[in-house]
Length: 404
Ligand SMILES: Cc1ncc(COP(=O)(O)O)c(C=O)c1O
Ligand SMILES: N[C@@H](CCSC[C@H](N)C(=O)O)C(=O)O
Image 1: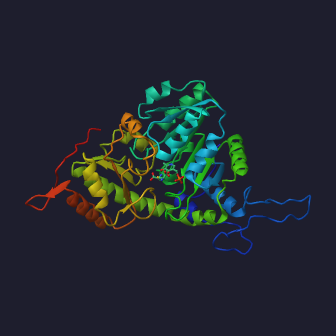
Image 2: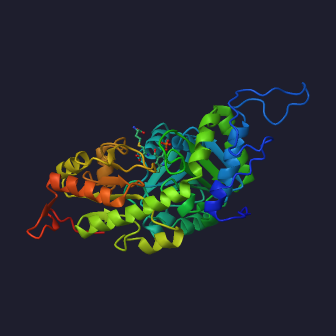
Image 3: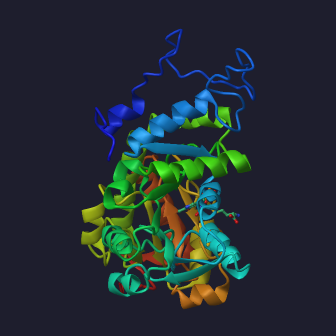
């Protein structure tokens, strides 16, 4: 059963009813590894922070509410979430995954596949019929991302989850919601069993912690997830929980502003003739599907220039956009996924998966959008990708027309 939120998400994010004995306005930080017991027979709720900590409980209850889950867990990174979730599987289990996933996700699944721990197959999730045909009664887990990082592919998660449960009621459908955050998507409402997010990104929003969160409505799955977290010791530290709670309060205003900026920038680049991948543009092949699943297109987009050298010059030509991996932070970032976030996917696999080597990824922040567009314009001019005509209008020299 889906839990009930009392207020709208923006309100729930800032509402603080922590029940503190001194009525502290901010939830207190329990920076303690151990908790004393009243007696040998009376243990109390907490004994050791690896097993549980009041600050982590505060955060987890908050996360469960905003993700419409019954159970939530905070761990040390997004990859930590995937590690915990894959430990729910048994040796030799068959799993299906998308063919465009964050590079680190692909790396861990490839590692487990090559070691023979799991049998992993990657398929294009945009071809729903074909993806459904790969699901068999032996499919134990399915890993989905939508929109994907960085090719911005959208999948019909609702149809995939429904079909998977029909074919194998025990199949666990896992969804990485890092790109959308709870503001734009509620994957548990669409039938997934477990959702996780790299909280390093939008949830925290300030790039000052690494964290991951896992959420589910299923009590049995939650019990197994907790067992792994306690056994392996990957629960998030109290201070990082506290910082994550602070970041969460501004999530709605941050991401809405980021999205507003992203939409303008996507239109700017698209009008210049670049092939832009962004689910907020009508030219996106799954624009309607994305709209039916999400409440917004988010703030990550990618585009091609037709030339690796030109892309390199653009990335190195910006001033406000920082050259850095990651996204979801308040400041704007620019990167070349093939060289950075997705460098762990070998060149041959990238080619097989139609991963453009000249792809530039933009992660839009909350800065003044005119400044961001000026910054990009200067970099585009410097790189030679665009020029000014006699009327001082920009025009694209390469003109990579969308072939979406
Ligand atoms: C979509 C996505 N999922 C998961 C992760 C992993 O998160 P973390 O870096 O917090 O381990 C990342 C980025 O790192 C990501 O982009
Ligand atoms: N060197 C890191 C790269 C992290 S990429 C982080 C982020 N998910 C992104 O997409 O930019 C690694 O090898 O994991």
